[in-house]
Length: 195
Image 1 (cartoon, rainbow, N blue to C red):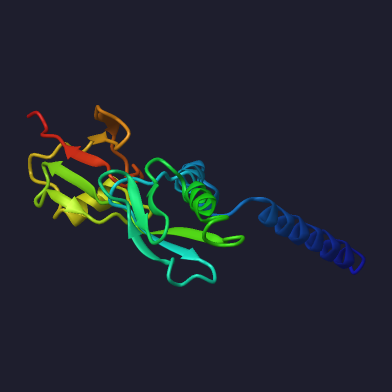
Image 2 (cartoon, rainbow, N blue to C red; image 1 turned 30 degrees about the horizontal axis):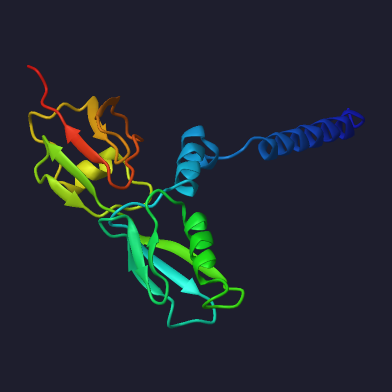
């Protein structure tokens, strides 16, 4: 019987190593879900629009740096270079555009950083208790937006939501889940259920 003990210990040790190897090979948690990856890609490809507030830093030039808002024409107004078209650009594209305008006449080898500090608001209407305009937060879902608007009314249709994005002229009917994403500038309409 004593000769079986080392064999049993070796087998048990091998099983523990195998379990530990399997745990490290399996990606953990929701951070690798396809939906979150899509959301991260959407954030990195975010294009600027009217109402976005930006912090622009021109390194070594505090007089040219500051906070700017994309106005109704889709531009920001900066010292020295004036209006800079921002509508539809990503922040890296805006940085490049500002560098082009500053280079040569104004600043030697300008380095520019642009970041969104406040996204344009979203709008919610229909069967919620407090329809209106609300500030956008990263990672916002329709369920969070409804909660911010005081919750559903008793007539609310809770399985479908209608969303009109800034880039579209028409709203889309989307099946409502807890992870249905809202983008800055979206108009969300909660419909009335049929009895």
